Length: 572
Image (cartoon, rainbow, N blue to C red):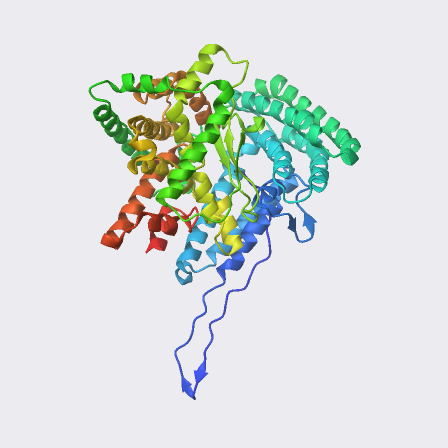
């Protein structure tokens, strides 16, 4: 998630001291530097310049300034503040002796370092704010939606803050139109679609819930915001659409972003080679499981076992209950004493990226608030063939795999355990800037683990669907690397997904769109799964006959989303 950042004051290094006892000189006691102060400054300073992210994290006030009533600043001054912040922290990190830090602090150092490198790359070279209109559209949607669904204060207070944010939407739209110089057609189109979701959010959802005493203020702010959003759609359609650019990063920028995003210690070419080998191995495993039938025949039979569009959301809820019972009965992990997960429709302004489902964790500073498993409904106006394609892809077992991945015991459990991490600044750092392969790898790892442990009566259908999901994660890595740096065409991408990894056309088309909207995110699944399996194997070797699966999960999850090199050190 892109975030603007604020520079804060420097701190002084700790000073070593000498102590005397009983008149005898003892060895000097070296006090380790207080790295937690640097972490606090980075986390709280970053949230101060991204009020949208601050609300989502549960950080509401910074140095006397209420953040829930503000929007992020994309003016030249706001962008300069972000650059200054990152560059200032580069100097602070350079002045820190890593060898003197604890293992936990070294993990935080690595996360901060990568966050700085990626953010400066985006601000100075990639410059998403000049090319990607979805940056502004999704920021507005989240800035209004978060205080609506997160019950951190009484409804009238939260709506007062929503009204203040609405009043600033025209200013942000002016900044967006000033900043945007060109855009890939796919980014432009998705931005307009998601912006329609913002308009609907304001004009219908929020308007229907505004307290009576605030209705007049809301209507005034909403009318101005709606006018600017509709004007922005016209700008995107009539002006920016004539200034097209390429969504591909190119090899130089991609390689740099790949290294900082994944922290895999491998080049894109190495990951690509591993993925293409894994694709063939996984297909062979599927063929063995399907025998005497073909893989396609078995998957076709599984695809016919699906719900209806009207019961799509209901089925997700039932799947969640079933998975939760199995995880608790097997005691795969120690649960925190919270029950805050809700299954809700994916917000319309996020459906360009989350075409099927997604997860929105509870705020890092307020974990008692809601966590949301997003499920994207099937639109009523879709043609029958498109509906059937999606239902076949997300059939009885395909949807269960998504529920495992996004909710139980995937992302929901991962974030819930991590939300007990102390101190709070470390918890927030690893929540907001944490390693994506750790997070996505855990979710995919749980899909494999649930089949290994016999979920749904050791169902062959579930295991076969799990293999199909593994193929999809492998294809994700291949797609991202080849599309971004090797000239892969749209048709080649679709052929890979449909012919080699058995995806329905509807799913493949949606994934191609996602690959064009993002970069260095899709390989995180494949890289992350391998990272989790490697970490478990190392842990198992150290423990020997004393190895207990839940102990490994508890130990690894309580560290939150640290890069795998750091995780392996912490587990030792």
